[in-house]
Length: 294
Image (tube, helix red, strand yellow):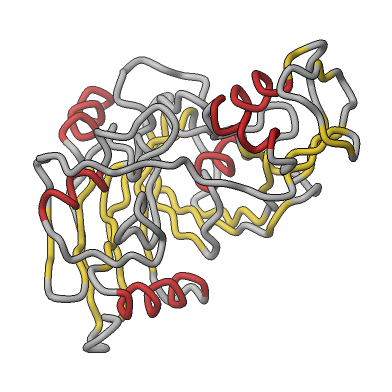
């Protein structure tokens, strides 16, 4: 990873911990081990970076963490020896990371079962794909490594089909929209993504209007690709961000986060090869807000 600094006379460790998904202690470790370069040279954690400096991460690390199982009310839609289908609640982080190591879906899964794939390491057992913290809805979890391997490949070649429901800001004039715009990391705000031609990957979202309100539009969305924050970034790109999105949105009234729900998931079972299809209702806060808009 390589990017340009957008700041003046800021400690290197402080700048990176504020703009990347790493803790300051892990950033310091990476710097001291020579895994982070500034303008092609090794620098100390206290080095003051300035506008235009080029930071390069030549080796990425994961947060060292012993995940503690924690009791959690899991909404399990389906389970067998190989997989789980979970209806994730809004506000739940999927796996441990900087600043949150105890209240994630992974903690709850580890309390519920000892049978989770370990392909993604000790802090992401069973996690084949993820939903953002404030996105609710259906998620696949692998209980065996074989299931994990097959599902990972199916996600990669887009055999797993998911449909999302979102409430967008403003009134969308078109009934159907295909958004084909590459997504990469925002060079100024490293925790955000954006539509950009620089260091990006192709991203395609299909959108269909379900209902128009006075100042909002209810839509369903299907993804051809699975980029980080794809729906939220593409919605902002077309001028109709997801309602109540704390990062990419403009209209914010509730603490629950963006009105975005993973409603259906359609896939081939990794072991039995049977077609599997599940659907979940919109969460209560979403339904209640739609009622107010009528």
